Structure formats: C-alpha cells, structure tokens
Amino acid sequence: MSKKGLKQIFPANFYSEIDHAHDFYVGQICFAHTVRPNRVPTFLSPVKQAEVDGGEDLFKLISSQGGVPKSHLPIHKFKLENDEFFYVQRGKIRPVVILARASEKNWIQGKIKGAVYLCTPIYSIRPDQGQDFVVRVQTYQMANLFYLPESPKGIEEEGIVRFEMLQPVHDSCLQRMKNISRNFVCLHEDALKLFLNQYHKFTTGVPIDPSIDEIATLYAQDVLTEFEVIKAQEKMSAVGKAPVTSPIAQEAKPS
Image (cartoon, rainbow, N blue to C red; front, side, top):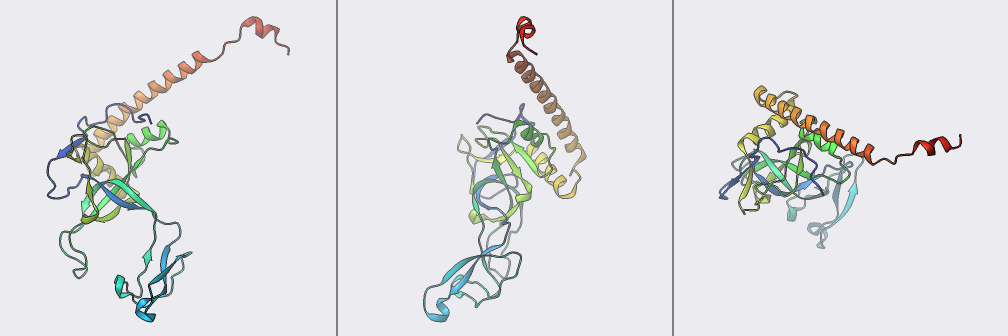
C-alpha cells in the first residue's frame, strides 16, 4: 500500500529510541491486546458449576439488549463474584502509544500488582480510506485521531491513533516494540507534545499549550498547501489524458 500522508512529518525526528527495558514510558510504543466496544453487551453466563454439582464449569454466550442479567452463584475457581460476569469482546494485538501511567502500587485490596497504563491503539490505514481522509488526520482536523508516519526508527507502516479507543492495559500485557535497529520505540519529545496536545483538545476542546497548537496549525497549513498542488497536478494530468474529438468528427456527428 502506498503512503497516503504528505510531506516530511513535523518534527523531522518523530521517533526516538530507548536502549533498555527497565520500565515503560509515556509516549512509548508497545504491542498490547486491544478490544473493541460491543454494540450489545455480550458475556458468558454459567450453565453448570462444578462447585454445585461436581461437574465441569460450563458457560453459554449471551447477548443482552441493555437488560441487566440475573446474578449467579460465585465461581471460586475463576474468582468470579455473584454479580460479576466474563464479558466477551472482539480484539487483536495492535501497537499502542502509552498515554499515562495509571497506578504504581498495589490497588483494589492487593488484587492487582504492578502498574496499569492508559494506552491509545494504533490502526493501520485501510485501502478504502482515501488520501483526503489521511490528510485531514495529518493536519489535526479530527480531534480524536492522530497521524503517525512510518520510519526506520519507528513504526513500519503509517498509522492512525484513535483516542476514543483508549483503554487500560496492565504492564504484564505490554510488549515493547522494536524498530529496524532493534531498539525500543518511543515518540520524540517534540512529537509527544503534539500527541498530548491533540489528546487534550479531544477531551477538553482546547489545546494544552497555545504555542504547541500554533506550531501544529502552521504545519497543517503547509501540508494543505502541498495537497492542493498535488490535486491540481492530478486534475491537469487527467485533462491531458482525456480523449480528444476532432472538430471534423464533431461536425459530422448527427444531431
């Protein structure tokens, strides 16, 4: 698939490298299991429980149209309380950008150890997503999206971060991404400022820093100017390739 983003992305050094694996950092790019929100809540409901009848635990898949399912007996094997359910969601392993560190110590009565990070998933650009759409993302016209260029120092293919798909990920479920040099990948300091600024605009409607937003606006104008030139060239090229009918043939054409 050909690249759909325009120009050298600002800043020129969009990615930086981390040469150790002691911790995770805001702006670091990792792989994680990411899920999609269900249109209809879907969960596994107990059908037969070993604690009750001595048999195997059996579940059936149920979709709820907004109704609250009945409670069930606790399932101690899975540490499932009577008002808890195994929710089923579609998901896949995607690259993510770490947005924030959510916890550093044990919490919820010591049930979760380690840190939980807020991560924004990166989606690849589909063939049916035209260059117009990608340029709109690249020029910060869609608050929930952020464009990432491909780079030997960063990700292999250009992608788009979707802030509305933000989700918590335990550090045990994060796998650090490596670039072509086999170093860990992180957003460059300047790129991270643009990233956080865009997220702040998505959640609050205002930039996190007017000076950063001004830089983003100037860059966007530069990209849009280039895009207009490209579209004009494509239009002229299309006109030049159009079949030309001779004046004599036009006169001979019956009315």
